[in-house]
Image (tube, rainbow, N blue to C red):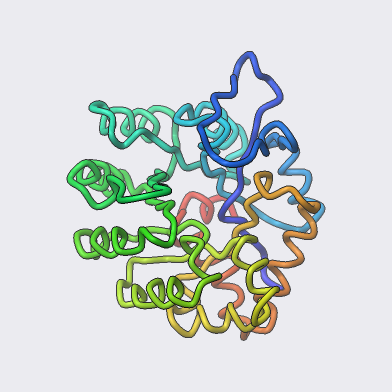
Length: 278
């Protein structure tokens, strides 16, 4: 199997004085139940033969304070790159994003637009300057939404057809046939990349099986637009090594070039700083 890049991880510092928690009103208290520091994650990666990882801001733990993810990635640039999350509705959102990218060295932005009901700000004019800033810095854009928001994503993709972006957890859309159809209809947008996470693979285990799901996704989107992510340590119901094993099993039936794309080269293309330290 090829080397692996884990495209979706979260880290929590044990130093609560320097990096105080600021939990957002979301489900779960994973940051208290099973926090893993960047050093913990690196040890787990070594044991599971995972080369590199993307530290995605844990909004549930820290809301918009990206200090720990930024510092952890800068401390170990051969292993990690980081993606910030910001309050996109704040008046100073563009300036805030510039700070995280220019001053703190973060290499992506997570547009955390989850809306339990109704619409979000995702396709509105509020995000236009954020995309402009990301493009100008070569920073990658991540989108986090729920299945009922796929129509918002469609409007965003129509507005930003040439900007590569990653969709967290496939928008949690793979467990419902109607939502999955809506997601697959977006395959026509070449900039859309999917993060296939443990959430998605667990759903597939209960249905068609992980290999069948992955084959279906690759057929629709192409291996060059698929990535695997563990969601560790937010997903902590089993050891990290088991999350990696599930990911390997999901992609091992693909031809070697496709498996390599899904497990490493797609992520390295979207996050070129990883490739510079490979």
